Length: 103
Image 1 (cartoon, one colour):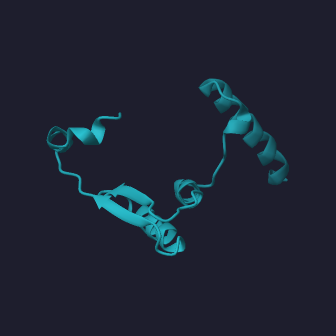
Image 2 (tube, helix red, strand yellow; image 1 turned 120 degrees about the vertical axis):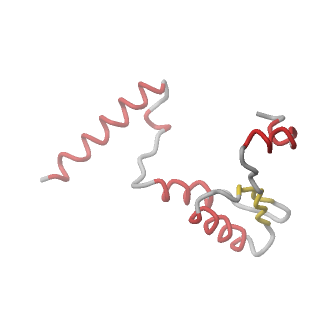
Image 3 (tube, one colour; image 1 turned 180 degrees about the vertical axis):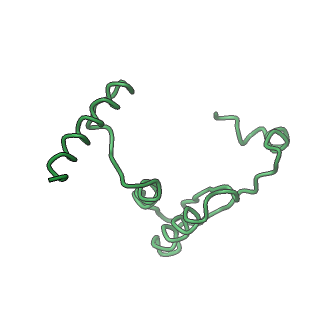
């Protein structure tokens, strides 16, 4: 019984969120949790020789594992570089303005 109610509610939620964001409902994806979303985004990129994946040393452990797996799946052709975050953050930015030059 709940299955018959769930799908129409999901469709309605996606339509309302899309209207609020000003996008088409076909541009949104409903996922069961954040880890699934991150996994989809990270593993959805075909890494090639010479590619470098940057992450921060303060990122979530599961993300580090996903990135390591993605790089290993590229048969070692991709490299993971973890950037150290110096806190407070404004000190890091002041010392490395090139990190935020494109923002």
